[in-house]
Image (tube, rainbow, N blue to C red):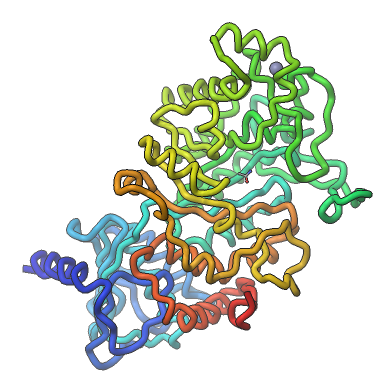
Length: 529
Ligand code: ACM
Ligand code: ZN
């Protein structure tokens, strides 16, 4: 009977998802699929409320209890127990979608039924927002919810500026509160190699430090700060962060850049280059001509050894191999690269990059993983099994999806959250450029220009945080919030966004961010864009 009720509720929910308006307001971001608040009354959650755990849902329950501590200002988390009737009860039901949940609130308390642990966790995130922004009062009613996209990502560049384990955990906390489930961790680039690799200790001993950093945008004459800068994560720290993310149902996708954006590796191991000359860890921003040699077998052996350790550290099925912005000047003059092209019957250097990427993908597939790369991986001819991250615009994503590749949409002009938020740039510090106000993200249709077939290959949407001008986590947060609110609605609630309620909901979210001490930019709330 209960099953039947749940199934009926899902059917009703999907029919009315976009048409029913609730009698009372509920400020939840991203927007749940269906809300019914017709019943009168509210259930008040206090630090004494018990969390009753059924079906071994201990982890989401304990995460929730921890997350409520700052709100209650308590020393101890709320009690989680197997027994009891009144309180917040969590369990699963296979009739609920994997990441979905149903929440019923009555005088008995709150019942959350997730499809899996993930759904329970997301239901508890919704409940947390209501409690924190509504003084613990949860209106009686019913919510059923599930995400629009399976892949809901945010990226973090830790090469241009380095962020401590504690900082990365803060970033993960913010993503989790918005129901994201992927962190794309950009661990290597020209300006610093940030992941310990046991087979090549030089990568972090030498490649994690740069002599100094460019000041400003590098217009002539250029100036540097004269301050050595560096940092890296030990493998133990990486494991700790991966586990922390997993506890919050976030998979970390590591990125090891190749064959471009590799000058820090070339500094550490000059034999990886075409000419094997000594280069510095780069002290500027942009695109350097110094790239890995694609002609020497030693380069492939290096990349496989690095990826082997990366796969041991990261359980993610997708492994990101970069692939973007690789100038081919060195390859054109390199006897090894030219010999490889001849041996493989390749017509040009683009195809040589295609060869390198395909060979690395084969290695990943042999090890049970799948490859994801920036959209330049299309330029040299891509396999059918690669996943493509469309960043230079939407056309690469459309092209890849039409040909049947899986795609993550992350076009620069909509998804680079290191871009300015206002036209005037007042108070925004020095940033890289661009202009992405909250409203622009909120209005974005990630399916624009796609056939029905292509749409099926859009596995998700991602925002990116490049850190050239983001020197600390406070700046990262100011760039992330409140825009992640808009972004999370594109990811979780693409079909149910509402321009008439989002501002009211974000005012509430601002209080939520404050409760956790997360830095949130004022511009959207001041009406500046
Ligand atoms: C990129 O912004 N180079 C992916
Ligand atoms: Zn070469």
